Every structure is written in structure tokens, then in C-alpha cells.
Length: 70
Image 1 (cartoon, helix red, strand yellow):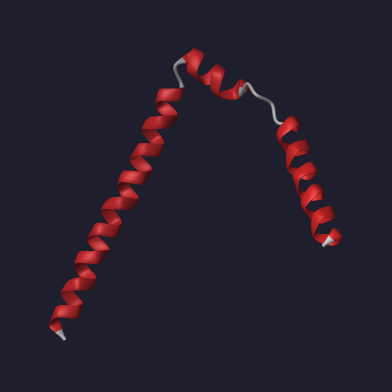
Image 2 (image 1 turned 180 degrees about the vertical axis):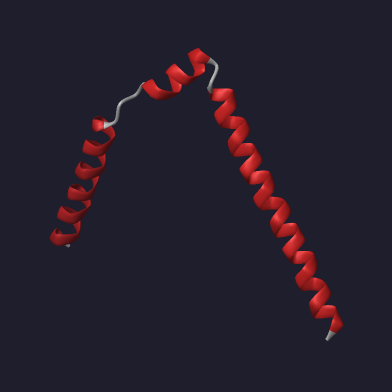
């Protein structure tokens, strides 16, 4: 019982130290937003995710077609 309590307290302390060590203001995103470059980053990420989604849809249709041929 005591070991479990000690481990729980230790776990909570480690997590609270990690939260205190984090910087609350992301400097890089503020700089990108100020320069207008954040929109380029969002556009590139959206393009990548759209490409992955399109590939998965293509692959699913191809697999379904192969399954139906058997």
C-alpha cells in the first residue's frame, strides 16, 4: 500500500515538473504568424494530408477490385 502511494506521488511530481518546465509562449509560431509564413506551412501540410488521403482511397479501391475478382 505504501509503495503504491509513494509511486503515485512520485509520478505526480514528475509530471508537474514537466509542466512547469514548458514554455507557455511558442516563439517560432509567433514569428511565422507575424511574417505570414504560417499559411505556407498550413498549406504544405494540408497538401501532404490530401495526397495521403487520395492515395489511401486509390489503394482501397484497388484492393476492393482485387478482392471482388476472386
